[in-house]
Amino acid sequence: MTLLGGGAACLVWLSAAKVPTLPEVATEGLDPAIKAIINGALDEVRSAPRSGASWGKLGSVLMHYEFPEECRNAFEEAARRSPGDPRWPYLEGLTLMSTEPVAAATKLEAAVALSRGEPDAPLLRWSQFLAERGRDAEAERGYGRLRARHPGHAPALLGLARLRLQQGKTVEATNLLAGCLEDPHTAKAAYALWAGVLQRVGKSPEAAWAAVRSGELPADRPWPDPYWEEASAFRVGRKAMLEQGSALLDQGRWAEAAAILSKVTTEYPEDEEAWYLLGWGLNQQGRSAEAEPALREHLRRSPQSPRGGSQLAVALLRLNRPAEAVVVLQSALQVKPTWRELHFNLGYAWVQLGQEKEALGAFGQALALDPNHVPTYLALAELSLRQGDRAAASRFLEQAKGLEPANPRVLDLLRRVEESP
Image (cartoon, rainbow, N blue to C red; front, side, top):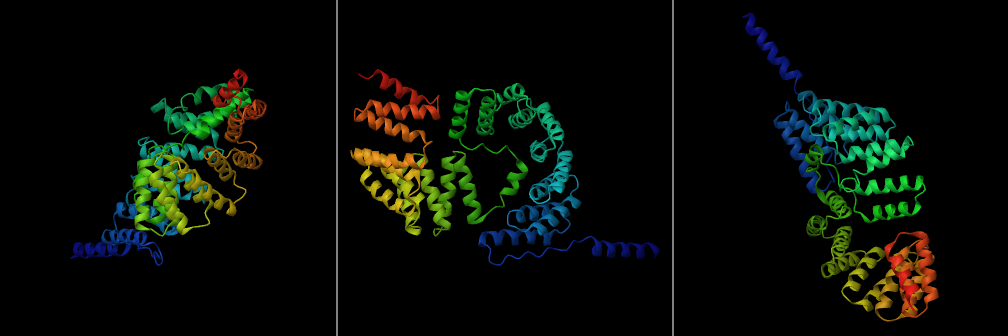
């Protein structure tokens, strides 16, 4: 009797005290794809309310859609029910970085302890966050732990190089940067930092070259992060696909970007941004015949878009249709007359049509709007050479050399001018 009564009381306590309350999530008015994935995650929690994984999935879904309190509560519940899983404090830490930095650092540190360095994403992100918050000594220890496991760890080398540069240790910073310059995860940032190092030690031409190199490189690729990648699978809908496609374009991953953006234009054909990004990406690949209809659709939906006109003109010029490009560019300039790129492309179109006077005028306007644009000086120099005006060509090239002393195209044209009779 006594045992039975005690057992019944235990069962009542478990059922009453251990089942958490399901959050209320207002999904009205959301993109249907977002609403569906949120409701699906809520259903999973209803089916398994004591599962850390189901609560963790709910937090991973909500973190993308501006439900901060509901998201945080879900991750806290996931951590209580799966205390050995580093995913939940790590992802919660990421959501808190901009609003509660102290709490974010605590959560990230907990994830580092639980993950024990594998994967290395929590340790890397924690170290970077500490450095951003001025906690340099702790950040340096974190980067050191990463290098102890992987001596050539490019993001850790880059982080340490930044710290060394802040400490005035330029030689050490340069040595560390040598391991970052060719890694696709760090190359762009590393060249930009190296340009600063070279400028600091008085090597201005080399610094200018490094800065140009940084500008030419695609955006650095994110470091592999299985926890974030797993959570990112729950980013759905038009906005998420656009952001993903745009990020891939920045990284130069044209084919992947085109596939995603084509999907957006199919599922959300009214979205003018998707048509523009698709056309821009296709232009970057040299697929201008495919870019043209995408950009025309963008302009049909947004006829006052100067960037759409600019990219359509690029496609038309590559398709050897300069007369059409002139019409498009002149229309775009009526909307945005102060955009250097439109004047520059118009000058190029006039050159293709043999209208050199008009080309000089367009390039001159481009230069007036942006006197530091080296390609405009080069275009004016080449046009001056074509007209036999070596003095003007030399003047434009010397101005370009003053901006980019190591630019190989500038130096080659200067040699041509000097060697011409």
